[in-house]
Length: 383
Image (tube, rainbow, N blue to C red):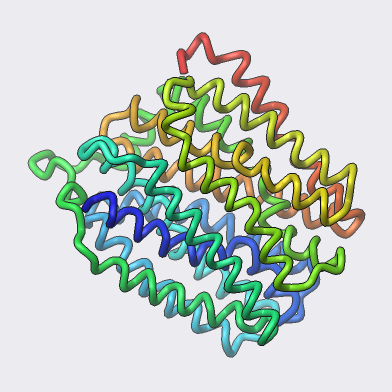
């Protein structure tokens, strides 16, 4: 029952993530009239806001309220803020609304992952299997967006996002696992700064976090400019959805077998595999700028994202006490999923206007150092 709740909510959240992550930049360009660089700047600014929000707002909320309450409030506020996009027309208004949206909406991601980590520790659920439902939700969203944009144009992206948020709100009211109540209610709440300080002083965790920041940040060009890149190659809207879904299909396949194939593999070896797959992915897109090569390299998403993500989740679930999981997820969401991506989105946007392929190639400035760090530290920190 607990895994069913987690699977449904992963599906619901990643359905909306499958709209926001690959399509929002393209929607800003086509429906709001921004240039690629302007849209990239808006999304980059939103990611900076997201980083600070997930770093400070999410842990504060998770400390004071049940994690399920945080998620319900986040969905409602996200829906209300997203409505403001409808009348907005100026660059300034779009920038402000995007920043407001990023104060709230991205916190749903660490909330979901924190729920998963707690259920792993307390109920011994199969994380990879439940997370595969999230990938399925992402894939369904990409397929639906491909279909509705082919029929109604890119304006349908916003309306599909509204539908996804409503679906996620409904998913919150299914049977909630008892394990997600307040953690250790008999103990006084620990100061957020104290938890962060304890994590940062843990050299093993800090190393794993830095490696995760580099590997997840390297997806910035893909997430923000992949849709625009395929449009520039002349790919039809529905076909773009199919191409983007290839990555999610391989991600689902990976999550389905991750525990069986990688159950005994160390986090360091998984990070090395992720770095190698990621480097190969971005280099091939640069060297062979065709839709076929882009599609083929989608298979490497299982390595560049999937393996790196599972390595981090496995590390914190196995090495950290329950009280530090939410702060650890906050640091991961703030730096690996937001701040690094924000910086690299700005870099990628500038390079995209010079030559689209350079935007992807530039991501190796993260993947190669990540591999070197793992090689240098894996024995010292035993991960």
